[in-house]
Image (cartoon, rainbow, N blue to C red; front, top):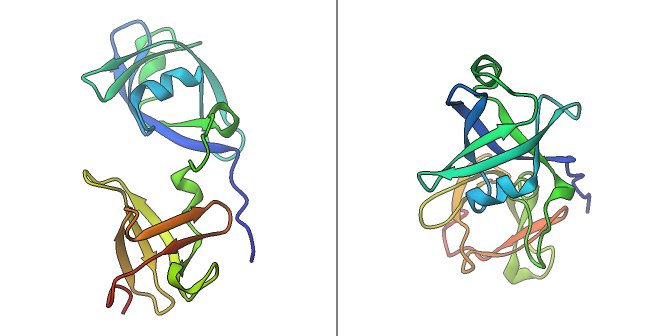
Length: 177
C-alpha cells in the first residue's frame, strides 16, 4: 500500500481583519482550541514550501473563538491589512501530538476500507474532505463509482485512522450503495 507523504506545514487558521492601529491582526484559529495556535509561538504565511515565518509576540483569545495576534515585523495597520485573508500555517514539528492523535489533513486522500473485513477490507472509497460540524466532523468519501458519501466522524462509523495508510470505517447497510 502506498503511503501519503505529509507536507511540512499544516493549515492552522486565517487572518480575517486588523485589530487596532498598531499592527495586530484578528485571526480565526483552526486548531482544537484557540489557545493552541498562540502556544505555537510562530506561524507561517505564503504559498508552497517557501513560506515566511512570523513569530507571535503576544496573543489573546477574543470572544471565545477568535484571536488577536501581534506578529513580529507587523507594526502598523497597513502591514496588518496586507495580511487580511492570509492562511496561517504551522510547522508539523511545532505540535506535540499524543498517542492516537493525527492531523485531519493527513486523512484526506487516504483510501477507506470496511473495518469488518480485516486491515485492508473492501475498498469503500477515498476521503476527499473533512468538514467541521457541531456534533462531529464529517468525512466526505468518494466511492469508486464517483458517488460521495458523508460519514460522521464518530467511533461507530470511523473505526480508526492510520495516518499515511488508510481509514477504516464500519458502515451501516446501504451507506455506500
